[in-house]
Length: 275
Ligand SMILES: [Zn+2]
Image 1 (tube, protein in one colour):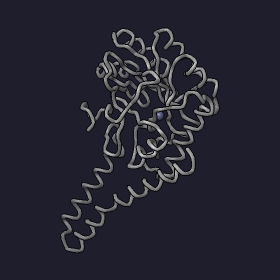
Image 2: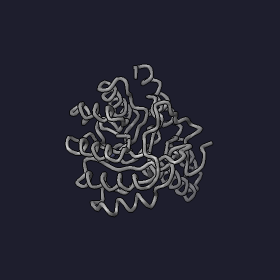
Image 3: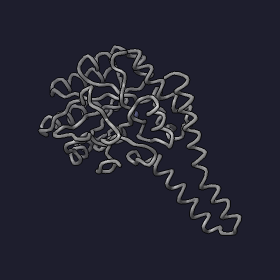
Image 4: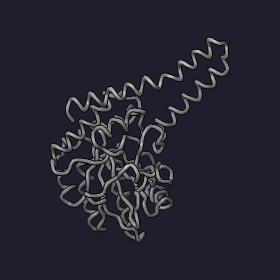
């Protein structure tokens, strides 16, 4: 995370931004030629493509991401976002212990700095922590420029690494899953793989435990990456319900070992091996 790697990353990001303006030059040329219809069509195609690539969480248009466990066997992965939380984290840790389930907690840097003892407890009880940005700007993260992305992701990485130097995060999850054309580049420059999910119940927006459980259950299979949240009004009930379901599923639910590599050739894009 030194100044040189930051500078190199930002240079690459702004080069990518400059290249992304190429279609606009073509749009301008089409207008100049009087082909306004073609210019409007091309502009709409580019705008729609960028919007989908940025706001659809599992769209890998702007960079590689992990959406299910590669070569999973009978394994599934439980991931828990938006902690640590002074009430929810200890309760959820007890629930996980009861079911012998290990999870990845994607933590917010500012909250981790407020409750470093919870971060240490998560790791001491055999779970893994991941990077979920320093301040969790859920509504504006998609629009951050490279310097802002670096500040959020590197800031969280520094916070979590300072609390547990022997367990630096190896995975990054963007808030709300939104990622623009620079996000994967910044994460990669910090040595992080971007992890999304393929089984979630929208517990961050739907206050209905049975709906959340049913939706996750309908998507659960070997290799699934399950997403639930802390810091919601139903966080404890969802954790209880989903962990019970996982325990009864016959699937192994543990974090990948430290030696497990999420190599590019193992990243899965929409159900097929990435090229
Ligand atoms: Zn989040």
